[in-house]
Image 1 (spheres, rainbow, N blue to C red):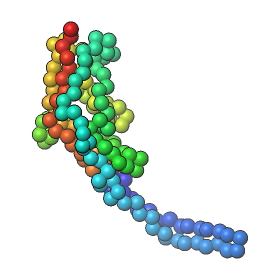
Image 2 (image 1 turned 90 degrees about the horizontal axis):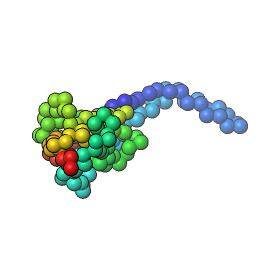
Image 3 (image 1 turned 60 degrees about the vertical axis):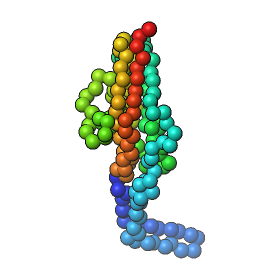
Image 4 (image 1 turned 45 degrees about the vertical axis):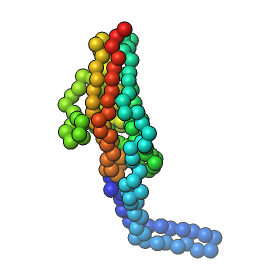
Length: 149
């Protein structure tokens, strides 16, 4: 259904006086309403910071969902189905990172390592895609995990 769908059905309507049948009725759900639904947020922090957390299970913690970075004006009609991490420039997929992951069902949550005693800084691009196959991307996001105090 990435690009919408078309189906042919038979409709039957009945009143107390008559029954009307309309065979081969075509229903067309276009994805065009989704084409402009996913956009970068106008106001967002250029950088965001996370604290060291020794108690984080597995060393990772959810730090943001797709809606931290993007507005989806038609979230029920055109839900975000996936997000991807890319290198700065948004051209190349980020190699597996011990610091950042996309998780969740659907995979639209940004998780970050929070148990790095020396802290770290990651620059990255995030791309999210809605059910119509429309992408939105945000480049050169800076995530900083503070050092253990």
